[in-house]
Amino acid sequence: MSAWDNALDRWVTGFVVAHRSAGATAVADAVMWLGATSRGLVLLAVGGAIVVIAFRAWRTVFAAVLALAAAAVAAATLKSVFERPRPPADLAMVLTTGYSFPSTQATETAAVAVAVVLTAPWARRPPSRPVAVALAAVTALVGVCMVYLGAHWTTDVLAGWLIGAVIGAAASGLVLAVSRLSVGPLQRLARTRRR
Image (cartoon, rainbow, N blue to C red; front, top):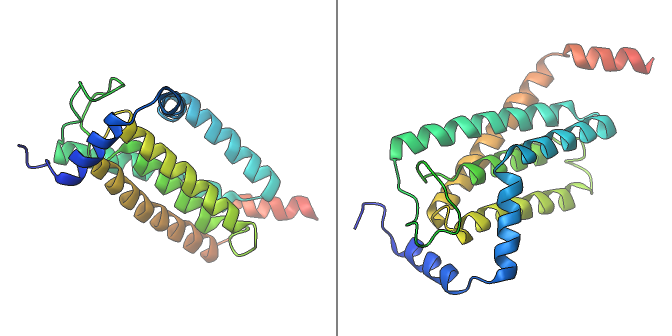
């Protein structure tokens, strides 16, 4: 037994393996295909561009990019510190390499979701609740799929969500504080064009 062995991870992994189905596997594969490759970054960039154009949400994009970068660095650093092995290959449905704790995808999706929810221009208006629910659902789906496919233990994902949420909140706080202190060149340009 390793120091990482715990009842929660064993129970959830055993339950998931016993209840896998073709339909759930197809969904999990699609989520991993999208989120664990450059395709996800392209979709994120396109979505970010749409948000900026439609809502002039520069702060939201800056916070999301900062949160994503910080989450990637934090997850990589923590993986090298903790060196937790991934679930055994006979339980995994996908080939993964490197260490397991924390889940990079869970950390990144939670960080971006929190950053967007806290900095979006509509954050204090009615559309914020559906956006927050949608982002939480995507974050949960990504984490659940990582466990379902055997790429991560449950505690890897839970830790990733917690770390990502803290990073997203910190990135949001930083971006909002800086934006209150000074009017940046992009904001000056936007004001000039409106006149």
